[in-house]
Length: 327
Image (cartoon, rainbow, N blue to C red; front, top):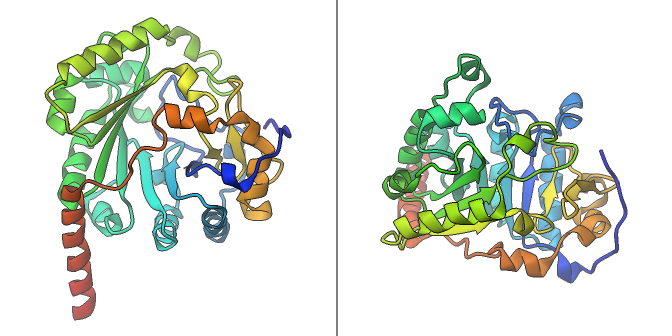
């Protein structure tokens, strides 16, 4: 783990949104993954109490949105408690997942507390997903993936329950010529984020080199899909090339350390948030983050949910209240 002290910053420069990589492990084998956390996997998971303390310190510092990511966040035993606490504290809440373990029951229970559901979908077929490693490790041993099958069910339930829906796609040499337009048209997410496969020193070295695409190939993929989905004005398509991703994310690792990636590698705070607070930890790494570039990549988007989703959420909340009253 790299620890480096950078220039200090004021509380006015606290990022409005933080990605908390709360779980180090993952049950998928994505070859391009830049959040492998091999060192963190060797240590005990954060306790429920420390995670709640971390969230409280984020809120006290002025952060307004927390995105639960991984690894695979659904594998963490305290995820439910942390989502509930985050919403109690007033955060806009979001998760990015591969969809495993997201049952209808789980989604229904979390609906009042979890605003946005992000699903990682990289291709229009599971043949391509298997080639990219986007599948359960047991499946990949047989060169197959059932990722789309699982995500279709999750998406259907999530839409019925009023979640804001995001799709995340990583463009690599494997899927650069794929056409996702019909899938996106059918699934109709509120937001589709398209990323250029990103190299991070110490995380995906040895695997990412064969998957990297040039900026021109990435832009071609983005332009092609924007053109084919011009009739889908309700889908916000956001592209992030490598330069847009470096130095524009405020992140916390599975042990609670704050980190940034401006130099194409991770730079961590000296101690975790639940020990020294978010403001102090952020001051140690904030030189690796640019507010202007964060805004330029549409990082400060309007994450209030569409009214149609909120109407469905209200029905879920009302149903939960009625069940509680009759218990």
